[in-house]
Image (cartoon, rainbow, N blue to C red; front, side, top):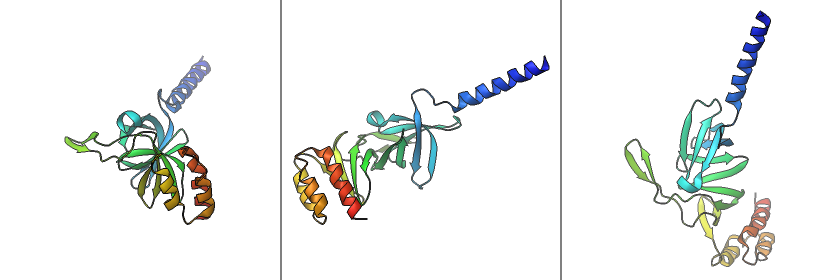
Length: 187
């Protein structure tokens, strides 16, 4: 009888541990890259489009927090990398000396609170889904009106990337290949 009780207790403890290790509903595994460059692993709920924020639960499930784009340098959500610039989150399509990003949130004009103090998030230009080049901490919006000029100026010192960029025919997502070529030749 004692052996049976002991096994039931061990099984119960394993069940509780297993429940704690499970991913909370609506969350996925992820990491937060804080402003001090430290990384915190846990579970993340993507709330970028709605609030320019992510909801975070640490791995033990004991701590919950909302992180805005102004609070972090980046996040990894279900193995997809995002960086934060001026309060907005951007999906990293290509990273290097020249980064190719896709806007994932729109923080401009959103209010966040530091205690009772209201702070307006700066945000960036463009809309969710727009593409940007990020060079020397400067964002440049790419759209059908600016793409040809950007190809001429940003890729001018890299002939293979420039030639590839000239073949995209207005298909801005295809510019990722030219950015990858640029980065491989300009390390």
